[in-house]
Amino acid sequence: MRKWLISIVVVVILIGVGSFAWTVYRGVTGVVGVFTEVDDPVIAMKAAMDENRDEEAYAYLAPGLQATVSIADFEREFRAQQIWGDEGSFKFNSRSIATGKARIKGSYTRADGTVLPVFVELEKLGDDWKIARFHFGAPPPGQEEWEI
Image (cartoon, rainbow, N blue to C red; front, top):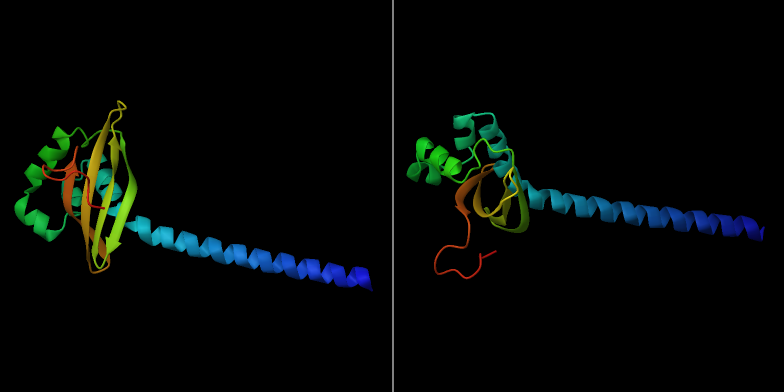
């Protein structure tokens, strides 16, 4: 009878540990998913650029940014930064999200291996994140560090 009781206790402990591990896993991946969804518009914009879908890439910009940057200026800037048509990729390592605003900081690694620092501000419009500001290189003058 004692072996039977030990077997039940071991099974209950294993089920408990497994349930706890599953709950932690789901909680962490859910939080990470929400946290990294702000990267999606930048990644999708780059995919549209790679396929020369200018208007689709431009549509990832927030209306406020579109009001100050024409589609021609937008394309010219990303070509000047050697991103438009480049086979490189974005990587973001720092994110800050607060009430409808997000800031992400990372880099763009060009196909030739050169790395360009990138800072992006986004705003939540309805269910979508839109790019409100894009900056390449070092922080703007007067800012020692990006405010993340």
